[in-house]
Image (cartoon, rainbow, N blue to C red; front, side, top):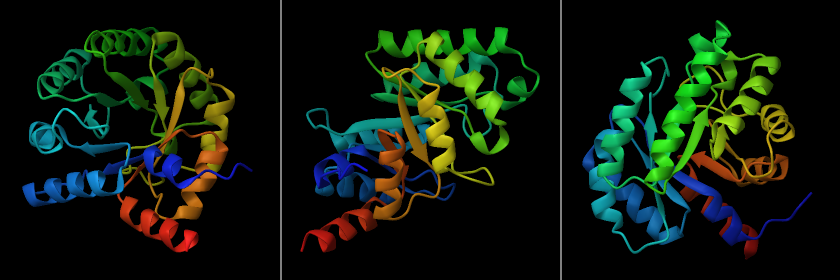
Length: 228
């Protein structure tokens, strides 16, 4: 087991608030906390991306993340593309796109791969990163493995476990499975239910490089206590 230092743990955190009742003061709080604790990113709904960019500024080492096709993933490809184009204009750096689980269940791989490839190309043209949310709670191991290979071939930068809105979030088994079947140049983002420092360390040790969580402040406080 690797003992990650505090800076690595904090930089792995994408400080997240995707609640449906989110208001402007919540976005301001999220950004201020990210600046204060030097998290790696903030993740907000598309509606709040422009404000989050203004609050973050442009000369700061914190990535602005938003979601695409959220939370169910079964929008048409052209709708997802328009979401990406809009988010690029709003100053987003990283894009977490939900895979079409309905298409996965139909084994429509010849449709899923071009969608991911087209979105990846647009994101990369804007010098951004694409993370594809697999929503593993609804998938078999075989479907997860297939998607890891397909996403990697289509040019995604990360595969991500969950939206946080499904019945189950990230699991150690799921992250390990994804890491085993994903090339080293493709990262793993674990999200959904990560609320403690112990969980953060365990997911990093399982192979995740990014952690999507709304509990970044609590994790920071645990780190401070641990280092006393």
